[in-house]
Length: 71
Image (cartoon, rainbow, N blue to C red):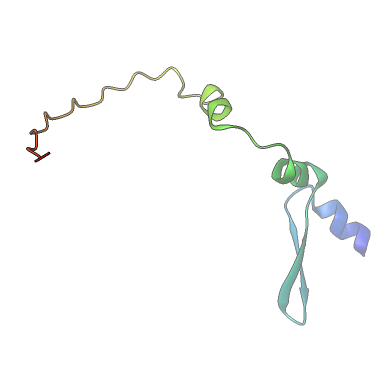
C-alpha cells in the first residue's frame, strides 16, 4: 500500500491523515527539491522574469513644496 502512495506522488502531493487529522505530506522528490533548493536573489528573480524587457511608463513625481525650518 505504501508503494502505491509513493507512486501517486508523481501526480500530486499525498496528504496523510491520522484519525481524520492531516498530519503529513508525501511529495515527489522533484517537488521537494523545488521547495528546498537554493533560493534566488531579487536580482536573479528579475533577470529571469519573462517581463524583464517590459517598458513601463511611470507617472512623474509631483514637485514637493519646500518646508521652512528654523536653525
